Image 1: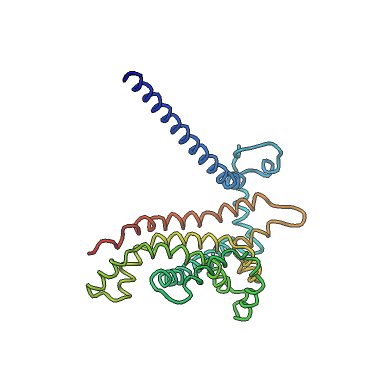
Image 2: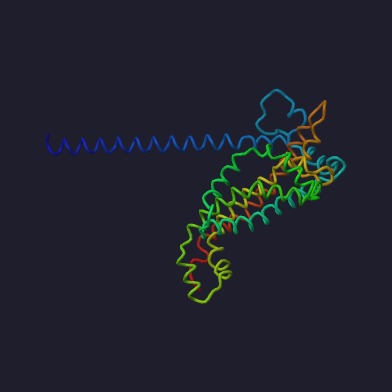
Length: 297
């Protein structure tokens, strides 16, 4: 075979490999788009239903978006409220529980992850395995024991009791995730700070904390969404209707004879806004924390 034939064969092979690579990339992109549409469609349907008229909601025809948008459902949620209380009352209760879970859980998670990643002690491996085992236990299986513990502690029918329970449920995952971030920080940075005369607390706050901030933000997002959407424990541990969170308040739109889908979708749409706002606020910290604190001075 001549050199020209070899070069042509190599060129054809290169083109075929390039086409296979393009097809593979196209397939992955198509799969990603399909997964994205599958995940976003329920949210899209919820938002569009909130602005549809009652006739469009209960029709059997497929209506992808409201042809004549109406604010009657949103207005009814704001004016009539839920169970005799303003919708803002339930949003505030959810915000208190979610933010309390994030703040308290972040402190304990950061301290626990630092201890597990930086210190060697007896039972360290067993503790890490125990964190994974706890995550495997369904939260509903812990409902009765946690209910008894909260009632004995005098925290029943209080938002603080719900915060403590949510912290306990999200803490194992937060410690496990933050442990990898803390372990990834070079010890040389801490040793350099000690040589410069920094105390352990100063080293922790000025060196370790900024570098672990991205992981702390990620766990905070997980904790916030978990506490914000939690329903079973909020329904069990809270008896006063004025202290209900938003997920529990939504059930009042469902009666034995009918379901007010318009109000449910409008209230659910309002319920998703704080989650989006929280993510937009902390995502900047996630990016800035990747480089903050790594340069001396």
